[in-house]
Length: 333
Ligand SMILES: Cc1cc2nc3c(=O)[nH]c(=O)nc-3n(C[C@H](O)[C@H](O)[C@H](O)COP(=O)(O)O)c2cc1C
Image (tube, rainbow, N blue to C red; front, top):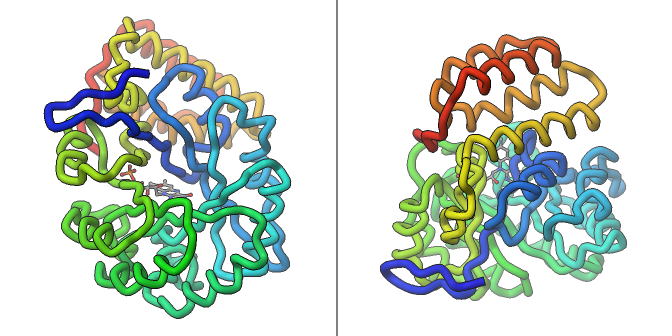
């Protein structure tokens, strides 16, 4: 593939990662997405919880079964703070064919942070160090980390960097917000730069890339970053990775592609999930980011939110597309 040329530089080794989004980017979404769109080099799967005694939920493990994930490179992610439980799950994934797993140190939700999981561990550098000391000898896989700037304070990442530098990690993905911020406020690019300056590892940037302009602005500032992870921006604009890589000219009819993607995803959902309420809930989630990018999509989404059965859902969607719509692109996250 030809390198992407931008005003400021050429990015010959740029890699784009699909972010893990629990409730959105499971293997059903990933497979449909990768059938219709290009641009991503790999996908990080939503987290698998490492439960006591190394147990994990069958459904979470099924999500990364290699036979369900043949269309793209996948990096499984594990949530946990107990080295033995974590290593059991990591070794299970190794036996399934995954040479590397990711440790979630970013999740901001109270339910997990109060148990010192996800971003809840970031304010305890000594615990992170103890975890890494104990987990490496137990694990067959390599490890990467996905983290925020801290739980409460962006200074927390600066205390962690010298510790992380002692270990061999595939990469560190940084979403430059604190856990306490959830998704509020802007990303802190100064703090991201400070953290990068202290790290000896390959860094993946993640956060608020919603357009090619966002990507160009942030990549112009951090010319040394080659790996970029995008989440909500892709839910709102599935063409975004192709646009960033300059491949979007290949799509002649965007609405037709969106409809085909939707139909494929919906059919897979019907085949995959047991109850009709699950299907309609997932389809509401699917449209929650995407609908505003379509002409008339906001009113359409109001109708979608009211549906209770797959039959009603099908008629609402078919009517919307039959009446005619066009691709406006995202208006914001
Ligand atoms: C609904 C939702 C679910 C998420 N699930 C995960 C997850 O399972 N693992 C994880 O590391 N991050 C998770 N994240 C965080 C995203 O991967 C990403 O870091 C965040 O959305 C910022 O990137 P973006 O601005 O490109 O969306 C989730 C975010 C959202 C909004």
